[in-house]
Image (cartoon, rainbow, N blue to C red; front, side, top):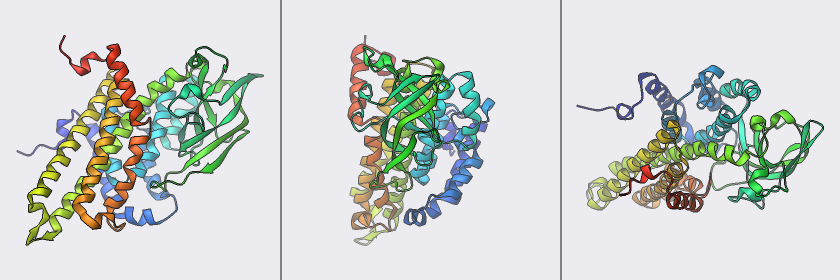
Length: 398
């Protein structure tokens, strides 16, 4: 008896239908065109339009606001399917979905009403403005300020490495509303900044080793005037708490995307090994290649299962900072290992741009350093473990 993959995941018929629709889109419209799209410098507007039609910008938005309202395990599965086709498409959705989650979970009723329905259609696209030239992983060190004046905020500072920042129209921005607060976290807030607000502009564009179709920019906030109603949740000083909760969703999405990239690499390696002859047989008949493929396959399934477990825990409402960090750490490191092994199986051909594995090899490092570096994830995991949080996940003997 053959068991379909999604029958093992606990997805119902409607959820499976959504995943299947994304899988068909990837097979029909994405994979046959990736090589051409990579050579072109333009944004793949036709694919983005199809993604909007499929409702993919509403993955994390409730049906009441026009979204798909997917459970997090289903959301993760969709992100994996997108990344199997082209990781750039998953990147278009990831930070947008994190912004949508932050509004849905922590925003005021007016903020949810104003933004979510248009975010679900992709009319509004969201981006995260967190990192600064002098503040990366240490977000309490940000220098961007938002000071109250006449019912508005005057925002001054700059943000680096803003993914989709050029094309986004809504910027979820971490700011200090009370620069003198002690501890600093008590003076940090999240603002919903419309990119067309006075004083907001796009600065430098960062050129990367991969993901040329995903813009990464600097956002300049030159005494930008932002409405007082833009404060997420309406109460100052809760920004880090709101952000860390939302980033757990982002880390699950990153982990799922890394799993999709790893699956793509394994598929390419398996296909190449079945067609490449050496010493009278295809190389998948050589034991050395078989052992490598077996390790790659085992790592892939382990990363997928950890990612889905992190999504399940987060969806249950339980504390999930440790398990989401574990999923991001393990999936991204595993992805890098699998892609490197896929290149080894290709031999010299893996270094040639006509073969997809060359692109995959350049894309994999992003998941290690993005959405919180893996060293930071290790620190979070260790601290939560030593504090005794999420003990049930570790299952240690008492």
